[in-house]
Amino acid sequence: MNFLWQWSRTDGTWDQLAPIPEPCGLAFHTANYDEFIEDGMMVFGGRRGTSGSRCDSTTPRVSSTLWFFDISTKTWTEKTTSGDVHGVWGHASTFFFSHGPEEWTGIFLHGGRLQDGSTDNTFRFFSTLAGTGTPITFVKLSSTGSQRMFHTLLILWDMGDNELEPDDDERMKVMGGMRSTQDWWIPQSAYNATTTMSLNYNAWQKRWDWDWSTSEFSYPSANGVWGQAGLDYSWQSGGVFGFGRAILVLGGCHGTTCALTNDLYVYKNAGQTAPALLSLLGVMFLMYADRACF
Image (cartoon, rainbow, N blue to C red):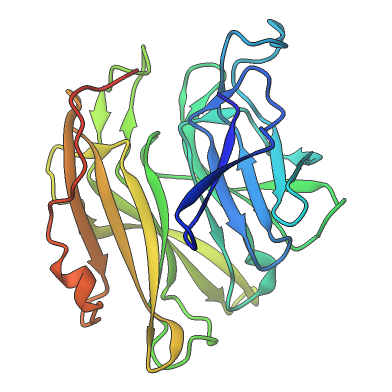
């Protein structure tokens, strides 16, 4: 499908907006909201359909197009891209607003399945600071860790008493996911380990760099999880927004047999106090599914 719906939390209603200009439709793409720079939504990648009223059979099945949806004008624009940009689907992405060096404000992407059928483990970035009308350059940061798709890329900030002071506690977590070497719907491996990217200052070269590390944190299921939904969550403490931060992970498939789950987990820093609501959520959520559809 290529439709776009907007839900209003004010009155609890849905409104259908202009569809994304992809006549074949998209699935397994990512969407990230940039409220700080362009006030819009970036949609990248995805697996295109094979039929549609204007679907061209010569169109690549895997999209490498970057679309921007302007929130104020409700219009779509295809961004001009360059650099290390590839068609990918089933990848993970997140918007990162850097409290330190502003050049790291933008969209980070990881993994996914490429046009040739291989599963990727590359960590990429593009800045959103350039503004409207400027080409977007994709930068390859590293290719480290497990190749995976259907995972989450989430931000965990623990800024102590000064949220404007950059430190090595600004980090991203690659969580869960699966890898398939043949048919994409038949997982060969499912992951529960978490890989962490930390923003650290390189005093020798006098610059900020992202460093890979394997976190001690693992998803509670030893069989791994993939296809889950994730959210990095902030709350107010003492009138300061963003003072604390936690990660929520909901649902997904366990293991290589895709045992569907409705578990809800919260992860936070040691010694950090989450709101009472998060503490009481437990592991069960009112979400039901009776089959997996591929």
